[in-house]
Length: 141
Ligand SMILES: [Zn+2]
Ligand SMILES: [Zn+2]
Image (cartoon, rainbow, N blue to C red):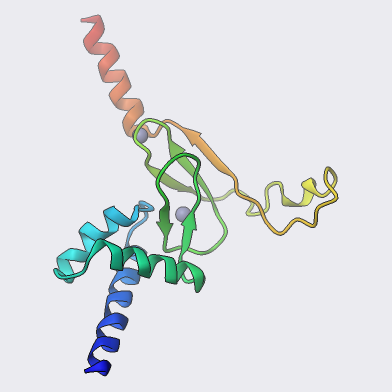
């Protein structure tokens, strides 16, 4: 019986991890829950959340601590920067930027021993930009 429960827990964690790694959208726990539920109909949001916290602690995934919005999760733990749309909240990766954009410089300005940094770009995503243009056209005509 106990072995069954342990097996189920491992399976749930595996599914949460697999589904997160398939996505590049940096989902919130609630968004990922909707996807995981298709494979595990009995899983709860609390379980998905607990697994995400656990996987974050194990450094298998990363939690994006972004300003003022719900925590989002990333199956890609390589160091890369993110850009967040201020309209719809979508978060995308920025590829090709040097991973240590400001880390080296900052030690010139503080006596802290710097362990890392969080840098988030904000902007308007292509879809929201397009929607804006369409609204403008509608308003003119
Ligand atoms: Zn947007
Ligand atoms: Zn990312």
